[in-house]
Length: 205
Image (cartoon, rainbow, N blue to C red; front, side, top):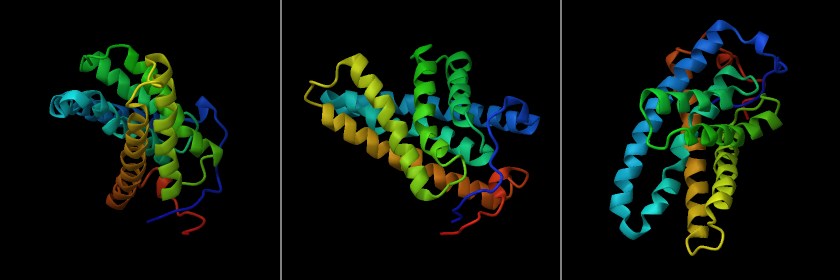
């Protein structure tokens, strides 16, 4: 498993994005827009299965809706790539697949993308180790949870801590660990040979 930093990090400038990077972002957003929509269907099924605890299903699956951000960041390695990827996925969900959650998906996407991207931004998009992916999943789950807890008044409810713990675990596993494995698997296939994520890291450990 490759870990490490890049020597050639660039400051954010939309003009530095190549057509290839923009197209990759569109492809990732489109693919994960469909995947996210499928997880929404699983969410409805899980609600039925959980009965009186149906509302916890969103927290159990939450990490699945974080995955495209760290994957896009690890491949493109430019500021806002994670946020843009989440918004692109939301666009597919809402406009193409008619998500039952409507335009609110865009707000969620922006917040989730921001939470996931913070830790990568803190490293100046130079470190892509498993611990960084895990932290990305953690904050990608925590920041949206704070937002949702405030607007839905979860703080004083009996399930508050169950919601929090389940969402953080889901974020770490699906939004962090699985996303890292996905990037590594894509790299091994050679499909990313023309992208920055295939450059050798400065440090392996």
